[in-house]
Length: 181
Image 1 (spheres, helix red, strand yellow):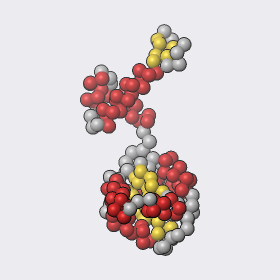
Image 2: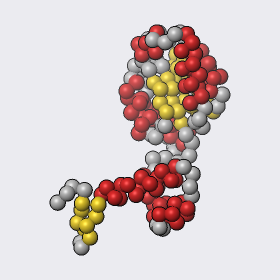
Image 3: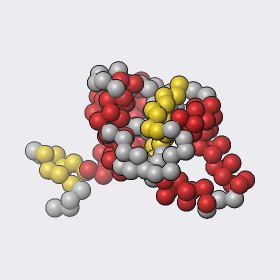
């Protein structure tokens, strides 16, 4: 039997057909259609769409971005961000930050920084893990609800370890899920 097909009693069910329909539902909802409109268009119950969304929900509420450097445990912190549903993460070691600056001309660097700032403005809250000076510069560029977590005084020239449990607690506090920051 084809791996796509599953026998359930006297029914033969196609996994691909289900996946295509779910994709259509999610695309329509992401474009702003109401659950009721999607249900009517696809001849489904609105409650089915609601339950489908609840089944796949990662988080509700505030959209969060996390930016930080120079971080010794970047990979650990990225994993926490992914687990907590952070939608935009830009974390770098000092070597990566230096390379980021070195590989671009002055004009390119300014453009990239402005693009990143514009992207960060799309989020409700931006968490900045950085030095006192760079953190305040990012805060000024973003101009939103910005939470500066100072990991040292400028200039930071070596990677700094930041406790993943503290980041997790902060992200949960922002979302109102509890935990102490």
